[in-house]
Image (cartoon, rainbow, N blue to C red; front, side, top):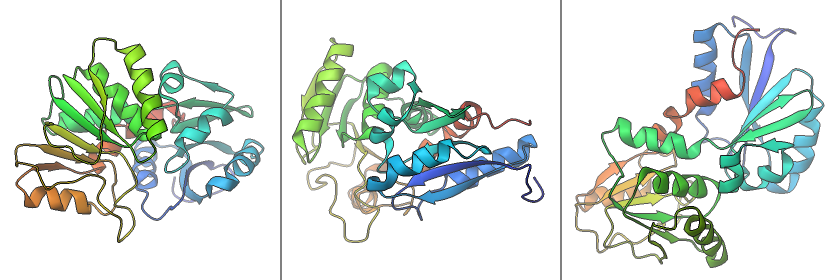
Length: 265
């Protein structure tokens, strides 16, 4: 695409807040590489307005789909006309393509997170994993870690009912995996993952305590901006290996492009 014209296909990313998103840059680069006359734009949507915005996008004939991110991944499940089995099991959607006014959803966060870890030489199989969060991305990562063969998984979330619901779905899907409900103390684990939005806003508290970390842990993020979040900085100061959020996006960009139909018309 050299310029936007009446032939240009449009995709979006729905988020609140929106300034931190990096997906448009990555997917627009892939479309340029593939020779696609298309563009992805940021769409700032509050949670209360999500249904109205999505209903409007269905009626936009040159709009071909979108990425859903914080805080919309869980809510998108019920707004789609069809979702993949993985998305239904996880309970969240982050990629939606439009086909004749019908919305088809998928969840790619888990695959992206694992791909990012492995690209960095981190293999979660056999690790004792601690996951902060029980929202859409956290659900996807939890199932991906279970599928990857972690030795045990602890889930900690401010709203305990959401953590319990995720625990129960994991226990049903992976009966041989020890799954526990935890608190803000992650000591005793090998891999610690912040899958909450804590760290996006200045002044956010840490998603978990780092006071008892011994330096042998790996601490991973899903937040991309800032690149080094407060919890990553605190963990690094204690000698831990840190893994930022960008590799998770990079691990799923081409999956997103393929799912959304970003190919030459």
